[in-house]
Length: 379
Image 1 (cartoon, rainbow, N blue to C red):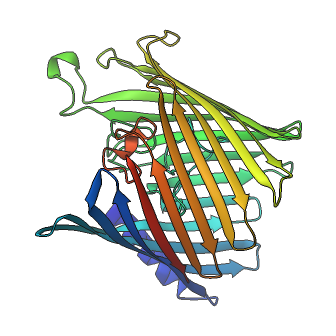
Image 2 (spheres, rainbow, N blue to C red):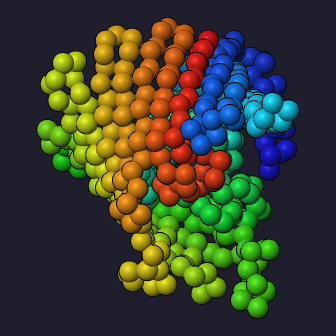
């Protein structure tokens, strides 16, 4: 699909180059950072990332528009393990590559894109297709290859439908990847409710098992998986929200074919000084043999504090507490923002092994105790 997609977008570019005038724009980010870890005090890491974005757009008199976006994620890192042991790494990958048809109430988008939704902010049961870390000032995440339809009603209700294909790496909370050549599909309906909104979401995929399970345990190369979710958000003087998700893998070969996740949260801005925003969430995830058995459970509480010092400077603190392991995760950031430049000084004090975003692996930059300085240039 990826090669066919590039071919399709090339044809679209040819179409864009004819008929009506085009609107062409470029933008991008250049990011540099230095990370030092207390456990690895003589092994700092220097990194450089470049994300150029190119956009084409054409608006028609019939009140619809076509646009295309292409961006790359190019990065390199250098780790100083010793004076004579310097290790480098780097990659250049497509970051976004999509084409969109849009009207005032409808859009259809095909290609490598970001798909995310839900009400939670810090610990998200509905983190199905992205891996956005709330501590990341850039909010970067890999995209997925697929087709997305969205329709917006005049009463602010909206309906989503999507189909994904050739995404052979785990995404979101996934541990096992999807079968590359079998489509995934799902949808979401979101409606206004009182002074807020509520939504139901569904997704189906086939899990790749080749090389992961003993042949005697399974007589097929893939396992069907269905996901169901309900979420909502309201303003009652304080903002409140919840997300609830149920995932079922239709097999007895896996130890925990049922997973449940629930999050409830609130936020409020206190009238102290320039306004202190306080956000809190509580998250529970359980995996079991049956739908409602206790099984294995993890439980986290999260607190985020955000205080603007002035027009340019903001202080942020994000804290997680792991009730099962009695661990505290702490993150602090001072950010100064100009028109094009952003300076971030971040400090973290966390367990060596992450239990929050296990999808991040053992190489998570915020594991352990340390400091990171990041400078961002936007153009």
